[in-house]
Amino acid sequence: MSEYNNNYYTADATRVFFRNVYTYMFGALGISGILAYLVGTNLQYFANLFLTADGQISMTFYVVVFSPILISLAIQWGVERFSMGILTLLFVAYSALMGLSLSTIFIAFPMGDIIRTFFVSAGAFGGMALLGYTTKIDLTKFGSLLYMVLIGMIIASLVNMFTKSGELDFIISCIGVFVFTGLTAYQMQQLKQVSQSGLNSEQMQKMSLIGGLQLYILFVNLFLSLLRLLGGRD
Image (tube, rainbow, N blue to C red; front, top):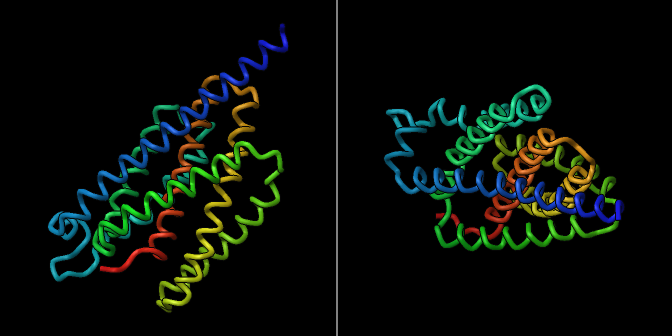
């Protein structure tokens, strides 16, 4: 009976943990999506935020684009140091800033392509998340390899900011689809292990926020990679 109870509570803790993870993830997607749509579909809002009087990109744009990187690092660093309230505020700020930066897709791509790509991304993400949760294969080495490839992608993307090569952008996008779908499966397996690790309530809450952030980042990057491949520029 004792073993049965332990298994029951482990399963229950796992269910609650993933419910919280997806609550954070979908909450972040909601915040980002609403802000991206409101700003990206109103050229006056967009210009006031991101353009100077002479039509050049303003410093605010670069702050909005790069601030989420610093905030995500702060969340990762502060998971043991910050209270849950501070981590939540940082998480909301991250989601909002990402939404503002994602507003550019509504200017660059037709609405129909954005909607279609979103559902394709959701299907691919959901399938790989399910695979990562259910597979018995250890994905640790696979995940490490994908993170190495991701570093190469980031370097190539920085180079392409200057070279502006369409061919390189296409290659990066193709690799990105593979990397971000694979990392989705890997992260789901890692989160499943976290949910069964016997952490206390506060630690589980913080790790569910971290998990939601990780899955959110993977989904957004998968979506952007697919959008560059499937979307037609306006």
